[in-house]
Image (cartoon, rainbow, N blue to C red; front, side, top):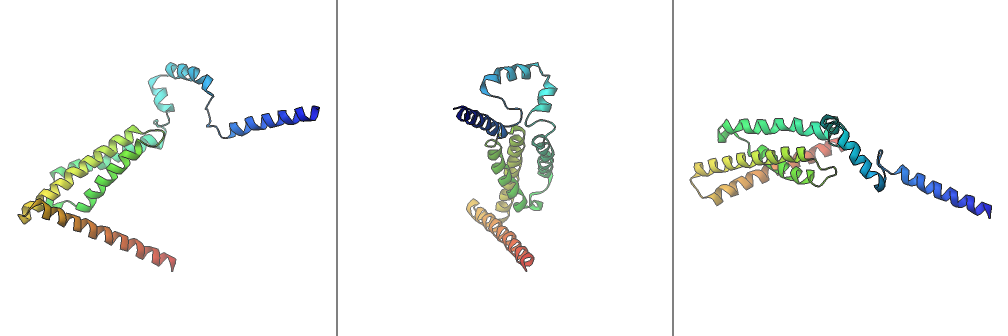
Length: 175
């Protein structure tokens, strides 16, 4: 009888250790959340920012801060003539902004700072692509549909060229 009790205790203790091994560090059970909230309220704004999962000491903070340079560079290109703008580059900025804005709102922890910079990056890309579209439409004197088809073909051709280069690089590395 005593051996079965020892075995049961061992099983209970090992189960608790197993659960603890997969728990996030610093995570506590539900019954302790109110004390965590009280401790968070006692921290200063700087301490909360510093200890946040997306705080100043993490890449979740510094990556968006550095990415603002792309937004600023795109805004400075508003002064450039539309004929000197790259459709491929601005199309990539638009796609990057749209895709990563959505992703930043799905991941945990949600990174609103990164979502904001990606949203503005997409907006800058849309403005620039629109400028290129309008410029080419005015050159051809044609309709918007013709200009859109030309832009579509140019983007498709550049995407095919990039894919071909990637395949060539992979073939060279494998030989």
